[in-house]
Amino acid sequence: MSPLCLIMAATGVILLLGALSNKISTRLNMPVLVAFLGVGLLLRHFVYQSISPQEINTLGTLAMAFILFSGGLDTSFTAVKRVLIPGAVLATLGVMLTALILGVCAFWIFKVPAVTGTYGLTWCLLLGAVISSTDAASVFGILRGRGVALAGNLKELLEFESGSNDPMAYCLTKVMLVVAAGKSIGMGGSLALSLFSLAGGALLGAVFGWAGKQLFRIKLEYEGLYFVFMVAQVLLTYGCAELLRCNGMMACYVAGIMLAHLKFNYQHSMSRFCDGVSWLMQVVLFVTLGAAVDRSQLLNEAVWVPGVLLSLVLMFVARPIAVWVCSIRSGRSWRENCLISWVGLRGAAPIVLATFPLAAKIPDCEMMFNMIFFMVLTSIVVQGSTLMPVARLLGKAKKVVDRDRLPLELEVTRATSGSDMFEFVVPENAPFDGKTLAEIRFPAGALVTLIRRGEELLSPHGSTRLKAGDGVLIMARHEVMAVVAKEYFPESGYEVEKPANLDLKWHFSALRRNGKEEK
Image (cartoon, rainbow, N blue to C red; front, side, top):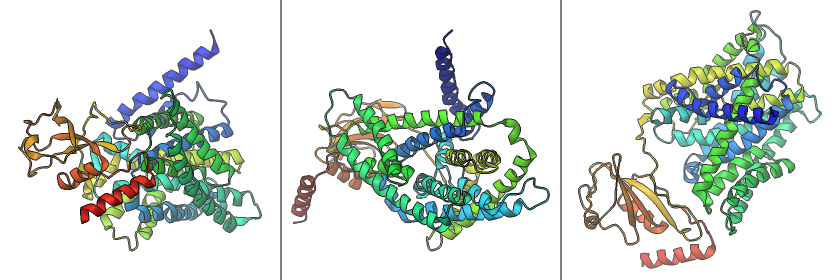
């Protein structure tokens, strides 16, 4: 029997188990990350026994590039602008404070006689840097699974923080690795260079995002080649940023946000493709990480005793202090700060970053990797299982109606670059509730293509009467859609989108039209 056949069949089984584990994690109110890691732990004695730290590090870096790019592509630029300053503060100062507080506390915890092992301050600060970033994707996986969302702009704030704090934790880890190696540049110089690389990564990400949009304007004979473009986009963005000594993770995240803001041809298809690649990367990464950990080491007293203590410090001391310090003059209520403090689940990034000390062969790096793994599991189990009760207790959870995706969708191409399609929900006590489409008379150019009523889909006619709760799928040009949203559905959350082919001619024509309307 061919070894290749066995490898392919085993890989298929692993991916299938990883995908199906999502149903189990939703029912148990746990992030899917736990299920992926569990599959890896079960396969510990069958596969990946000889994988090296360098190979894990390479796989983790590649996976994080695609995961962050996909996260940026799903992030609303308008929402980012609303939470840019508080999110950036949490993602930079908040991460540094979390790493510092946890590192100092770890230094004193390891001096307690009941705790096995003695580690220096540099080692402890490195551990704090590795575990300092959060994983909001796991949080919202739980919320969506139970049909619950966060009130206000907390969702946007936490999404932006989680996307941009991974590069910051990456910078701090690099800084502490330089210090641990005893290089002459020192902590101050290394931190300055890391912050410079973070800013450079953001700038390069914006440039590569704009360039990617231009790339998608090229007309290809086969639409499947656009998916190749997208893979090349991620690899080029990360690779070029790192070659220029900039933060490749930040570049990938910003490139995704920039592409989503500019709009480009086949955006819906590309977004789903990137989401699928991101999930594939997560399954492969987490299963591999789970298989790389020795279960007997996790149960070692030298790992779980300090792991429990450090997890308590992280959840109840380091993260809350960082959040409250960053909330000074932010106007956030104490309830919001408490929820933000609790929504600090650790996920993929800390485990991936824990492979950097392994690759650098830092003393006691295996112990650090096992502790990080244990702390991530503790955070997911404790915070993940109690997130919804805490959100409800603080009055920051709201019910979300789960609506299946409609069978109609407008794909952005050259022919539809100036148009959009959006489903508006008829609110309670709307002035046009109970009226026919002919009586409502939407603006000229607004085409009602489909009506969703419960689980039934209706073909619209002039005599069709709208009822509260109906989903009205409308297609129109951007300027017409903005009028529909403003005058008929002001609370819909619709964002005025720019057309795919942005140029000065379009801007000037829009200005001339606005000027005529004002006169």
